[in-house]
View 1 (tube, helix red, strand yellow):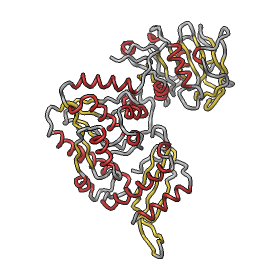
View 2 (cartoon, rainbow, N blue to C red):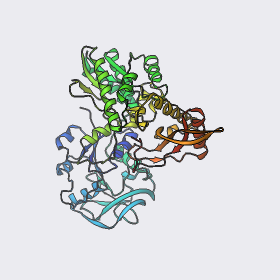
View 3 (tube, rainbow, N blue to C red):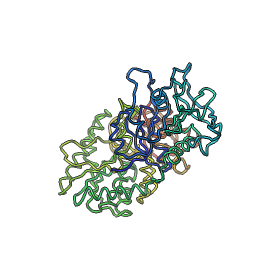
View 4 (tube, rainbow, N blue to C red):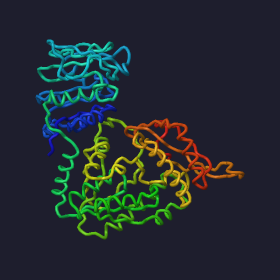
Length: 516
């Protein structure tokens, strides 16, 4: 079992995943578990430190989440954040009260020396640094053995510590980007207080995973569905590095892809990485199945079923296939074991659904310990081109859910051409990597226009360009007006059948990123 230097116990904060991401960014491996995780399982991870996350509850609420008190007897350094601080205070006999007003937003943090020294938690950080507060309760009386190590104008106990027991607690959230030196504070906890020396990076992860995969697979074969997206591309590259021709990678061209996508995938995997990629041309089958269908959910189901049908046909051609590889990521794992849904997220799944139970394979999920940004770094480590690794998310059902109404060859041609022009211009102006997603949507709404001396009655496309860090929330991008005008002119002039372009200025929430 892999050692986990820092164990993070989740009490339901929307920021819990950020704690893990910040630590991993500085090379400290950590994992998230629900606050009620069995103490023996925690000990088995052989951690060097424990972090209590924040959470929406009050420590005095009936049924408020509590930890097994045995955790304090492990002799490990502990850091409590927000709710974690209040829980530590109460567990050690201090007092927490409801604040007169909810404190939310930025505050200046002033460091308080103890016996003439600043706490090692704040070593190398400045006095008066900006931190992010988000709490309704506050510590009013410190537990015995604890001292104040920092304060703000509104929080006399913004940070406290029991140096002897190596227990620290923060009222603010060091993990959010608004806390100027938050990452440094978390790193100090890991390196200076917990004494973690190991440096975790994607090169280390790749070697470790390759060894694990070889050991598990032995002489059996692994089937892998390659979509061309980031996750499946990285899984394919990692597995091929580990087991070579025992991997059976299958790419299904459903006819719903972007311009030149099939050719790019074939070039990268067949030519660059020398992977024996199997390509199934399913364009006609998918289009036939989608004929006359306009309901978005029905489209998804049809695409999912058709994909499974073609994938199963291919699987039956190969013997000794014991495993199926999937690109499950760490956020999916966390959500599946969350505390009554801690770390509640607003998530809309656009990928083709999982394979049915009757396809009896054992799962291999080599990315299940990684966040998306780590998957991208791993892809570069494995030799995938930057363009593929940093591509914008693309939904499993492809352009089918970017065409409102029936999916026809004509509609696909229009949206594909408009989409290509949009991406060309976004890349040419150096904006692609700053954006989360940018794409065109065919509205199947016709409007009157004038082109030359002729009156037209043709299609409208909407441009959807958003900024986001994780896709859970998003804001429309403030693209320069002259660039939007240039993109609009190109689409109308170069794509026969489109005479109007509109820009979607809806954020998420209330809208979703995709239209269907």
